[in-house]
Amino acid sequence: MEKFSYICDIMRYKMLFLLLFMAVTMTAQNPKREFRGAWIQSVNGQFQGMGRDRMQQVLTSQLDDLQKDGINAIFFQVRCEGDALYPSDLEPWSRYLTGQQGLPPNPYWDPLRWMIEQCHARQMELHAWINPYRAKTKGTTAMANTHEYFRNPNHFFNYGDLMLFDPGFPENRDYICKVACDIVRRYDVDGIHIDDYFYPYPQAGLPIPDDTSYAMYGGGADRAGWRRQNVNKFIAQMSYQIREVKPWVKFGVSPFGIYRNKKNDPNGSATNGLQNYDDLYADVLEWVRQGWVDYNIPQIYWEIGNKAADYETLIHWWSQNAGIRPLYIGQDVMRTVKFPDPENPSSHQMHRKYELQRSLPGIYGSCQWYAAAVCENPGNYQTVLRNQYHNTPALQPMMPWIDDRAPGKPRKVAVVWTTDGPILFWTAPKSKSVMDEAHSYVVYRFLKGERIDLDDPSHIFCITKQTSLPLEYRGGQVPYVYVVTALDRLQNESKGVKKKVKL
View 1 (cartoon, rainbow, N blue to C red):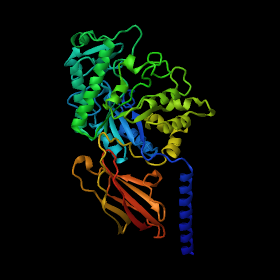
View 2 (view 1 turned 30 degrees about the vertical axis):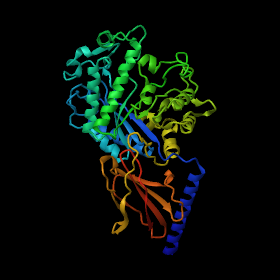
View 3 (view 1 turned 60 degrees about the horizontal axis):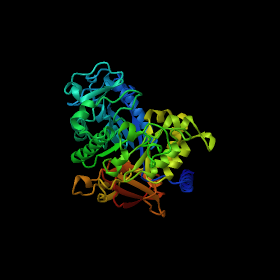
View 4 (view 1 turned 90 degrees about the horizontal axis):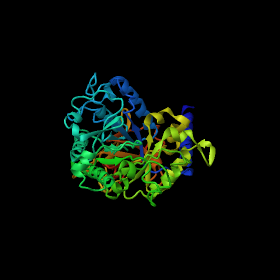
């Protein structure tokens, strides 16, 4: 009787596996490579004065959730206003961590290092998110005496409630790049990320007070063109210096969602809003053309049907102007679920936005604004990510301009039978340089007789940094073929090595 019951269990298991396989093949396959990011911001004060244990608890909960949602990259804000959410000899501790700028955390800890460890343990990239030019925000009433402002006060200007590093001073470019390279040198970050704040967002009737830097360095050039050139020089310098420190670290930007309006440029978008090029002096397309950035994430936060900045209009425009770098889409979670789909008013706009994102050329993923909003699951946004759009794992998009050479394939792949059950073991491939080293591994699983298709992400059983994987033994009645590949830091993938086993 027990044997009959066991055979029935095996048959049910095989039938369930077949049904799951048929369900996957009958629906649209998710891409094997796709950027799936989320922003975790500090400048909103969500961690301010929270303390180490509570902050780690909150972040652990978010990261656990986001891992289940298929998120594979985190942008963690570590520099809000010339400060640091990590120990730095260059900048003071952030008030957005401790409540007082310059005050170290107690108990002492390093949020950036902790986040890197947590993200990497979950097979997520960690990009250190910095704001380059902002030096003081509205709520900062006291600055630490170790802030860069007190060393070079003439290199800053006030604008409304803000204080900014003046982009016109070459010394500021050097200093900000020094800060970024210090992060890259000391931490195992996967990228440096900057957001949409360059020259300040304009306020009516308030000119930018950069007369001093213009008089010193402008040379009589058109002021607007000179400002754009200042930002261009910064972006180029940042890109070059990061690559000098660690050639695998990515550098990307998430600009405001409108480049130029058509009324100002016939090649612009059919929109009517603030412009990167004209108002923030950020020539994003030039950065892409020159290859200074490794990815571009325009913040297309509006809804489909917005009169001034229609999402559908903008995603088509950015797709057409993606250029030579991967385009990811900045998605506003709350606004997406707030508005109905014009073509299907009974549904919010998530499905239509993802249909556009997945169908247009040049787009290789998206980033969620913001991580906590995803975890709150408004309008079942998280549920749909988890069960539909991200229900299979995804590797990062390839970046051949950084590295296009795959590592060697894993060696000595074998199944070892232990008292705790079977374990799939392998050995790291040999490498000639740090760029060729295996950094993690992909384990695929197929039923005996299934076509071995490594382009199908539904067969990804595990992505791991380990060189072993425990397997579940079910009586030796189900034959599988496991395939193990190696990934380098840029997730170039090796050829696979097969191993058959009955579980």
